[in-house]
Image (cartoon, rainbow over the protein chains, first blue to last red):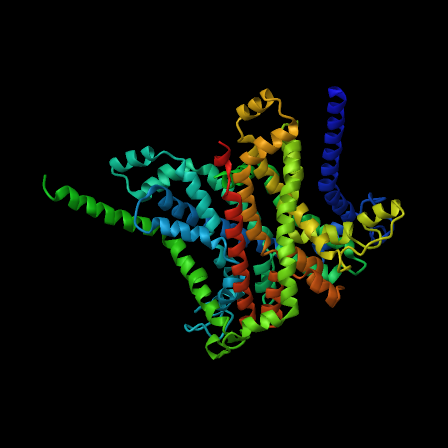
Length: 294
Length: 311
């Protein structure tokens, strides 16, 4: 009897696994397939699973179309995500070092504050931040009072500045640096090394894995971010990032006979983050578990 | 023994404080410009009538009217209701499914492959996710789900246009898109449970269900607490999917918008389409209050009788 029950639970296991696998995989498979189909195949009933002959021209058309500036969207996304990631790594590791390895009054208050900011809804500061950036003096044609132009909102700065510090990044770096024994730091201090030297020559090399983890997280997060770029690029189309650009293509294309191009563009838009994740999967997973356990 | 050591140690402590704040200075400047001053401004804006087109100083004071208007606005009340359903549904149902998946793939061969499979949607831009589901799976004529229904001779459904099911359709997408990270946190939590507990349970002759109920679940409590708190904070502010699959969509009528609108979508529309900055910031404070209350309640409920009480 025990054996039959084992068999039943084994079959149930495999059934559930097959269900999960298809639920996760089929949507992606369909997207790639749709990106290679003709318009007739896309609108056919029932659904076409495999194109009769793959239409690679869909990709070519979307890449060379004068209406869709896919190259520009990629470039903007790349610039914005790279600069945000670099600055988050710098600011988070600096703050993390102070919180983990230095003792001074106000430190714990700062840490509590940082944690509590994660609860703030975006819209509590979004409107004033938009206003402040538009009124940034000397930028985007503004005078010193911040009048006359569109301030930081007319350049990449508008997409970057509100994200150069990340509470989650500070938290992650602090947690990581807490695991480094104080002895390392104290020994260097006795040798007369400055805190800045200790930070750059001892701590930074030791937390390399944290840099990689936070870096991937931040890059993918910024790459996929939508709400803020949507708001900023409504009045500055030359700054459109990939998600916003794709979104614009959806409204322009989804009911037309060239909607297969839309699917090709969507596939292209997925590739960068999937590749990064595939290449650095281990670090990404570590970042999640690190933040989740402690 | 002179006063010298204490003198130099005080100097060192002053120096250390200065160094500490130097390391924190980028974050402090950032918090000041992009957080503290803006939140202060938001409080101010929430009592005023302002459209962003004129300088803030020339807005007019209208007292609590923005808050009163919010609660008279049916769309806002719908948004609050939908957001509650959305957050609780996606977070707790998502956790349940994620726990099942985590248990299934815990000791499986090719674990990295399975991990990649459930995780791929997490790194996919939500625009793409919305496209896949909107034009592939939920499409009314020839979509994946309706093709399956047709095989069973069942009538096709308007997954995104039918106001009775639209919210749940999009919630399913949200669960699909975020379940990967929940699975991984659960996997880590499960791996952290010492083997001795299971051996002890085996010796006591516990059934798999008993083992799960009395060993696994209580020891996962910190993981569940973490996932609930962070998951809810994110879910209250969901925007991308609903904006792209419904409220910002082209063919949805008014009743459909009421059925799916979420708070952040409402705030976006109020601020950047209707230019009612005062009302939008007032709404943000209501959202903040909701987040605070729920975080507090979850912490209270899940901390009580935690792991400690089983030891």
